[in-house]
Amino acid sequence: MADAGSLINWSLLALDPPGWGGVLLGGLWQSVQIAIGGYALGLVLGTGGAMGKLYGGPVTRDLLEVYTTLVRAVPELVLILILYYAGTDVLNRLSSAAGWGPVDISGLAAGIFVIGVVQGAYSTEVLRGAIKAVPAGQIEAARAYGMSPLQIMRRITLPAMLPHAIPGLSNLWLIATKDTALLAVVGFSELTLVTRQAAGSTKAYLLFFCAAGALYLMITLVSNVLIGFIERHYRRGMPETVR
Amino acid sequence: MSDPTVAAMALTELPTRQSFFKPHRIVLMAIAAVLVFCIVWFMRWDWVPKYSGRLVHGVGVTLMLLFVTSILGFLLAVPIGLVQVTGPWPLKMLAKGFCTIVRGTPLLLQLWLLYYGLGSLFPQFPEIRNSFLWPYLREAWPYGVAALTISFAAYEGEVMRGAFAGVPPGELEAARAYGMSPFTVFRRIWLPRAIHRALPTLNGETVLQLKATPLVATITVIDVYAVVSKVRQETYITYEPLLLLALIYLCLTALLVVGFRYFESRIPTRGA
Image (cartoon, rainbow over all chains, first blue to last red; front, side):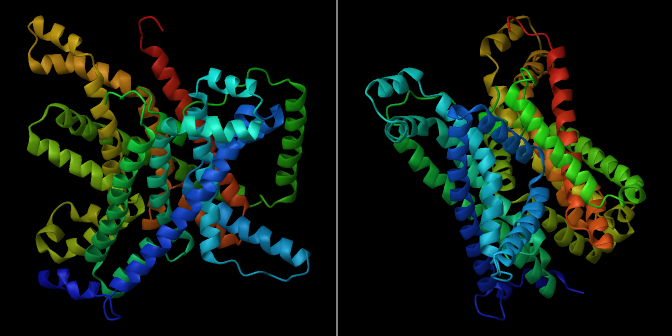
């Protein structure tokens, strides 16, 4: 039985192997990679989804509605399980059907894919709202100048919608960093699972979970500072919002 | 005051179908029907009757968790929001710090911190072991309820802060001019108006809370997610239980949204 003193055994957090600090930082790095990759994939899917929902044909719109509705109504944990197993399974079958034999999918790629698909649905909704906030006259003016749809998007729609999208997108980024923790359930060794292993083998549960919490909090706080800069940059010329 | 982020995050507007019977929709629905038929016909569903009792019980546990933690969390969120608007600065800082820390770390980590961390700490104190609470503290669900309540309180506290701050000051001044005591002003004007303003966001947060409940299965609480995991372990069926689980959550989300919409429509509003 541990006495009160051994509850805070700081040497457990040392970076070298007897301590688990290095392992935790490795897990943190994995989490950050997945969050960045998944967020980027989500943005790509979201931009396409928002464009399809606003300007696509009736079939595209309905299919996208089904996608965003399903993803937003089912818990992330369940989606991650379905996508993780189904995604790797489908890929394996495809590759064996093509005669390449089973492929070994890295956990990192699977994690990025899973988080990206989930984030894609959310960012579709965020971006759709932001694009709708762009005055229609500006887009019509661009069309009157004879710009192609791609040019309109690049020159007018995307820059003009960014100030409206940034609060939602920054929130999505914070959610992406926290959603990576759910990958612990499918056995991917990101920060939360690594922490649990460290805690389990040293019995210093409180210390390790608090340390991991501090790391997550650090990501959030650093992100908030960066988001503040980005927001100030892109909101130049927008009227001040009263908060 | 409908927070656009929450609206994008949680399904608060059910997709409205102006008319089902447009030509392309009929084709899409036919394809969907074929897909559903294939799923029902070609996949294995023979395990459902055997586990139906446990599944229903699991749904009950999930709903119970949802309602208990939402109500407790909301009761905590009201003071947290209020203190951030009018409280003295130490309380303000405390509430703000609480919201930042809880919102800045994953719920799964908080859950495990409470369950494994506190759960391993408590047995070391004989006072706790001998107290009447010990039979409960040995079980998993109090930790799940605590973690979900804290998380809901933090997110909703932020919403309530905005809602309290957004009540027009003229209304509060009018109430004060009528000679109401501060508590009466709060009870009659400030709280009802703030809740009314927060309702759409509250709906979204409740849907998010429903989607957070399956996490308690990782600390051995037997909710519907845990039942389905058990089915998958016992029958070695990979996809069917997960599909059923997704369907169950889809229905629960729709029920929540419809319920909230009914509730919102019961509150009279001027003009709109």
